Length: 308
Image 1 (spheres, rainbow, N blue to C red):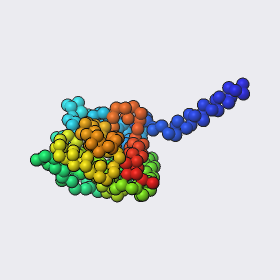
Image 2: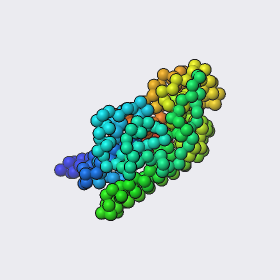
Image 3: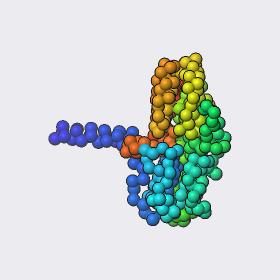
Image 4: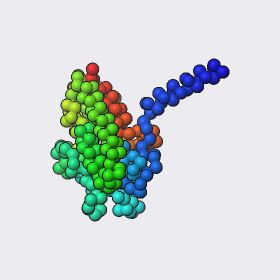
């Protein structure tokens, strides 16, 4: 009997540890209202799910595992958006297909409520490739995610009324607090590094670089499908070698063929840095959220920048 009791205690202890370290499922609870929210990017989805909780059903327009840069909505997607109570999209040119939907209070361009950076035009061959004049990857600045949380809280209270206001505010405060803690970790752990530059396949990380004080060198600009010239690849490999950079990055939805060439020519190794416009099907099955993946990004950045 004592052995059985001891085994039960051990199992409960292990379960507690697992519950602490494993990312919690997103949006698996049953909504207490009929409110439906559609969002275009994973970062916005993450914020809406954590703030709405069981007050709304939140869905991504772009399926998990699909590159948002290449996505076009299906007729079914368009119907779901039109029928939703609130459609939140990234804006800043990331989803040109949003122009086909009617305006109004139920259609929120989140880029209007955050701090934006001008795009850095990146020349590959004879052509310039970007999303326009604005860099749309603003969610990689955690301060912008706090502003996103503010706007989502405001919209939800407006839609749900005073009866839900206390709960929605509490959820939003918990989410903002967790973001501030995450931001503090980035500030602290990237404050003392040997290197000041990361190398990526697609320049989605300017907001992160601005906030935490490192530079970005990229094979292509804001559009991941841009094709750099052989000269660009060779010059980048030479820079990696001269600076002593040992890790270069690519993204989940981008081919690693060219960054592998940079790594081979320079002696660096290749790792994935997740820009969080969307997540992979595997990440979704593991219920990885914005904060969990950003923590993984932080560990890789510390490794690449050789931080103490």
